[in-house]
Image (cartoon, rainbow, N blue to C red; front, side, top):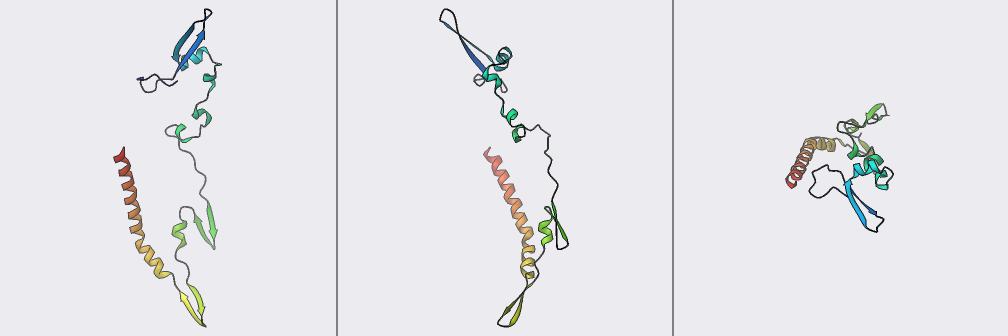
Length: 144
């Protein structure tokens, strides 16, 4: 069972052990699981593994200060330009203009106005994202 009610935090679970006496009566003892397992190492409750023993790499079982190592950042070269996961968005730039022929007339569609428009709103989008994140954090602290 869990620690007795009113026990300080970190108190070990207790084990209640009942034994049948020769006269037919029952003797029940209650002791800490550590003490019980020292005396009865083959008992089923003493062989159970904790979650951290079963899953040592689980986030909740990591020791404070342990930082998992990440793999190398992948790099890819396309048409002479080198891209990494960190800079792929900045390196894309604006697409080249498209040429379309309609009724024998060549029309060039440029993406430049759209790119300029999007680039001008980038700081606003980032500011809105930061503000939203800050409000989420403040809201989480208010609830707790």
